[in-house]
Image 1 (cartoon, one colour):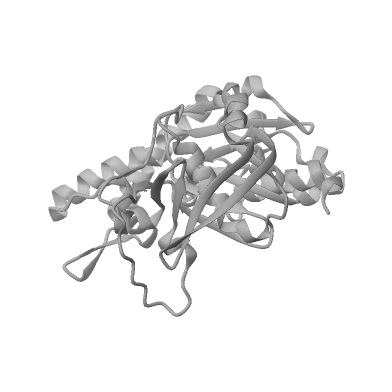
Image 2: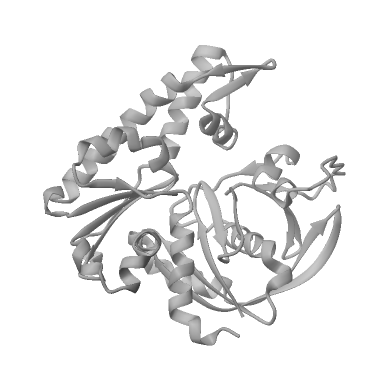
Length: 332
């Protein structure tokens, strides 16, 4: 049996089994044209040409979509119920471990706190055996993925189980006090409250503010300043590297990014103060891919705030910790 922690975010998919971890943009592209791929890397990165056949249709996933597909998208709808988008990303991530599955796997994944009513629907979509094809050197290989069990939790709990794993294991959680977790994602940001080892759903929130708001403004500013237009899926690398390449020359855009990041940080601070009495919290924990960019503006505002060491993968690592706790007796 294999245990997997899988975070299917609006911006990126993050997945780990504890030994290996992968991440790729949550972008799907059409792969029906039969593109010929000639790769000259000696050590090929599986994520650079990630392609699957799912329910009779071919798809590029992640960066591969940007390189090879003329029709690609990043689904930002709150319910993500168009087509099979969630399942395509879900099984695309699991396919990265296909040679290690054995007979079956168990997965812990997450939903925003105010989307937890969709948990049963999600489980019904992904539980059970699925047949699909993966591509190695352009040739399809049929595989089967049997998801024997799925646990769906509020997304920020992944960070709780990753950041405070040692304290939980040694029974020292009460000393942590009342914890607020602020998970800044691409489409939404989640506020979760944990007190006395209990998730308090009544005081947890999902707000429709995330890095996609920043991406829109950055795209507009790049167009005005440099005369270039970039869609959200092509901005990931520019934001990570804090620069854009035009005609072979890289232009530093740090000031432009910080101006946009500070505005989003102000929105999040206002939402936190509107939803919580922040002085009641012993710790405010910032996580999610967006917190990496916004932390310089958020952390100084709250004296009890911290940022997790690796906010980008914190949830997926925590999901795996919970999977090990929940199903450890089932391991072979």
